[in-house]
Image (cartoon, rainbow, N blue to C red; front, side, top):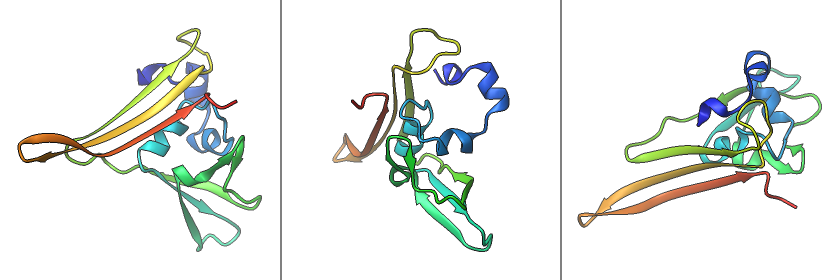
Length: 132
């Protein structure tokens, strides 16, 4: 499904940072960053001072992000999955190519074996395009 995220024009010209900092509620990737434990590294006028913000804390409201006028997002730290951890994305749109999401989601689940049974140890779900 990831191949349907963003059209060819966007994939070839846009940046991940640009997509993130617009704070769009229908961004295909932002729910995936949030559920995946991603960390955004932000730098301002003093490049020696790097601020780290978890993706789930970065989005403050409709097109509002935790970024000052003098700052830029310069790195996204996306941790590798752990053993028995799975990440999946979902996008629903009217068309497959070059269409914005009606709804999108990022989902992560980590399983653990307890007493011979598999249980959910950790789960994160993030949705886009569903607010009023």
